Image (cartoon, rainbow, N blue to C red; front, side, top):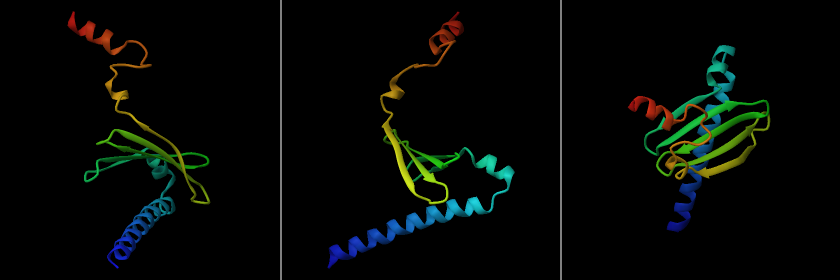
Length: 120
């Protein structure tokens, strides 16, 4: 009986989170002016409890959501399709090793060249 209650509670929490997310998403779409819509193209929010950064970008096909788990350095990208609301998982990556590089594909001047200029 305890297992069933735990499972039921998890489903309630899961469904509650989904409802809150969707109501916030669709609510923001219904109440935005054109000026606000441009500002929402690259919104970012931080949740201190779980160390998540969330960014969203409007695309022709829907809204792209990027979630970064700061603690584990993982990045996941989703697409919420316009009209259907279908959520599509696009990609994920553990960026731990990315952050170990000093530079990659950064163009000139490189960080090392800047450091040398400052040292002179």
